[in-house]
Image 1 (tube, rainbow, N blue to C red):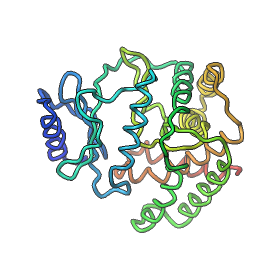
Image 2: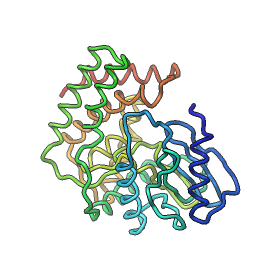
Image 3: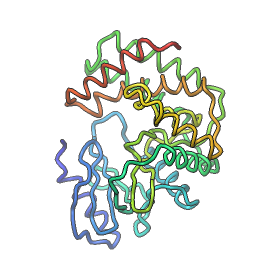
Image 4: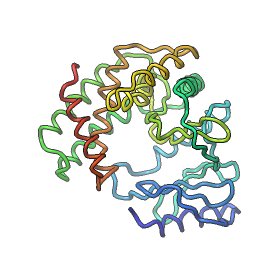
Length: 292
């Protein structure tokens, strides 16, 4: 894990510069992003991966804009903190922003609630008209392949497979209706809280088909866990709430999602546990067998 000392200082000093004196420093997450609870209500998110493939503050600015739009319109999301300008802020070489603390509850969210809240976010995001890059996480992953090759993180055959699958997914998703999306809508970016089920982590937001977010939600459950009842519960609730999705677009998104997650795995998890290594192996096998 990265040392949180300097990024913690960046967060506390930035908060203090805006009149908020931290009274605690509770680490909620320590990875490529450091998440700190600094007061009863204030949470800081600090990018620690200064040498990673994603640099600069443009993606943080997009996250801020989308998150504020959603919160203003009553979407089920964790809001940014109202007492500090949204930023993104830069201090001591780190990019950071600030969010309201919410209290997590242990109850697993029902698939119907996941589908419903996803549709509600999509519905509100159709009214977001600021420019967003199209299919950004897919095109970004194509660029990432050069870094993976240079660092020898995958063999040539796997890199070629990823390139072919990303290319086919991008081609398959071209020409569909696009809108602002979460971009990385897996269940790890959902929090069941005392305020209800809330989406968070909008840093991968981009413009694309709604099927992308649905594929991101259901991929693990459908392809790794074989939990068809859970998947059907999410998709049926999304449809019942008013959402529409195309089956072929969903399958192209499933392929793209698997390729993206495979490409980013050694970057996100440089010291993979045996369980993560097995998940990576199964994704690569699935991609090799995908009928696209």
